[in-house]
Image (cartoon, rainbow, N blue to C red; front, top):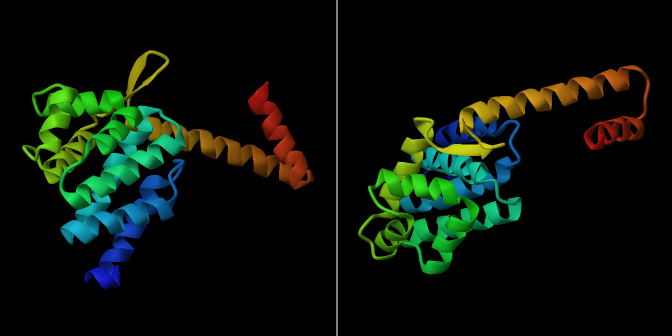
Amino acid sequence: MKNLGISSEDSEKAIKKMSKKLEGLPTTLDAGARAVQRFTSKNEDVGKSTDMFLALNNALLAGGASTDIQASALEQLSQAYAKGRPDMVEWRSVLQAMPAQANQLGKAFGMSIEELGTALREGDISMDDFMDAIVELDENGILKRTLNGHEMSISFLNVADALVQREHQIKIDRYKAEGHTKEEVMMFMLFRLIY
């Protein structure tokens, strides 16, 4: 980020924050760093860019789409942010990756999803305002994910995921302590997931 005029101290803070917030999530730190760098190249604020990425990542995860669709939407939104407005392809990738969350964003702006897409494409709503709304909704726990018919906040799901990951690690450590090989441990874990 030095080439963007960002101090190494600010870059380090951003990496530490992302590392902590991404723990237990399927998103890689590398993907986060790339997105933050793209956002920062436009707004020159690594702190704001980090918050934007983390909120957007939560919204994309809440959308429940495949990781490929989520990665594509992240890339498309990064491009739209850099240009200042999305084209139809970029907007459709958002709708595919996080339809319910896009609906919540539309409501935050007092409009439908279609109206929000049009307002963004025509520049009536800036990408900065759009990203700020994602951050605000994420911070207020409004972005939701539906799980078994129930809405749950992203922060709760992150905690639940971290607990599941910790439980799996405890089991792996126990199997290793019992003298099982790495392959046997993986087979035990796979068996437990299947049955």
